[in-house]
Structure formats: C-alpha cells, structure tokens
Amino acid sequence: MNLIDTVVPARAPWSGVVHAGEVLTIIDLRGNQAVDFLVFDAADTSLRYSAPDTIQGQDSVFLTTGSVLRDCEYGPLMTVVADEVGRHDTLGGACSKESNTLRYGQHTWAQHACAENFLAEGGRHGLGKRDLVSNINWYMNVPVDPDGALGIVDGISAPGLSLSLRAERDVLVVVSNCPQINNPCNGFDPTPVRMVVTSGESR
Image 1: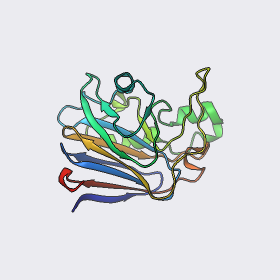
Image 2: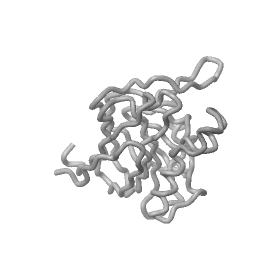
Image 3: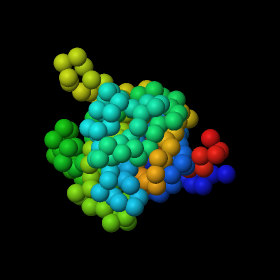
Image 4: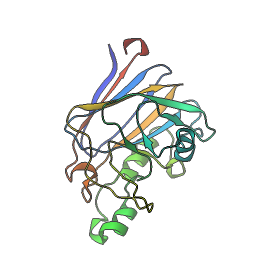
C-alpha cells in the first residue's frame, strides 16, 4: 500500500515527512524534468542536506544507487536504493529570480523559480531563507568538463523512469518541480512528476 501517492504539477512545490525505513520514489512522468530537492531531519531542521559532506563521503559529484545523502554533521539522511537514470546533479543549485536575470536577462525577473517554491513550501514548516542550502537536482544533467566548467544540457532521463530513496531517520523532504524554461534542464517545457512513499517492507 502506498502511504503517499501524489502527482506534483509542473512548476509546483511539494513537501512531506518520510519516516525511518520508508522509501520515497520520484517518477519522471514525461521525461527530462528536473526535481529540485532538499531534505532535513524532521525533528531538528538545523540538520539538513549538505552537498559538500555528501560529495566528500562518496568521492563523486554525481548521485546514483548507493549514494548516501548526508547532513551538515555527516549523518545519513537518505540513501538512494534504486535509480533507473544513473546520474543526478549536486552542483547546479536552484534557479531564482536573481540567477535567472544574471544568466538570461532582466526580462526573466517575473518568471517563477525554484527558490520561490522552496520558500513558499518551506514556510509551511517554519523554514526560511537561511534554510535554503545547496540542493540536489534529480534528473538534471550537469556535466563537469576537464577544465572544471559546468553545463546544463539535455537530460538523460525518459518518461516513466524513477529513483527511490530510503529514509535513514524521520526526514522532511521539500521539493520544487522546477519551473525553469530558459535552459534544457526541463526540455524548455516543465512537466508533472509523481511522488510515492511506501513502507520499507514493500520494497
């Protein structure tokens, strides 16, 4: 039985508590849709996802099966237990009105962005700007060139592909189903994704 089963519309936020041992599966319904993702200890949100500690712990800037999402004290929050795509981004960050205007021009200022989604949804749990740390971008393709340059290019996902994360303790997950239309992270056409939480025993 699914404990949570919901479709997050294109450009929309979502949040939920995933209890220890439960598995969150994120399904890319139409393919090539970036899902910006933050995770916090549900009992103490000062313990939140840390990109540097996660990268250091696994010696890779990309996430896939076996990757452990670590908090700012190096503790495990969630583990990727299944991944049909094979590589996800830890470096690209969340789009915002400020980054959009810097990258794409002043005309993009009015466009909705992930930072606004995170603030709106995080506010429901008492979170604010100080809680917006570097996030994960599930399904986003950000290759790293030999000279260290980053690029945001066409995704490597496809319709119906999924990834699953096991909660190592009770965690609060906050998601922005990315609204970006100025680069290929969503194929220039944001689409819905599905969030499913199951008990560990059902996996």
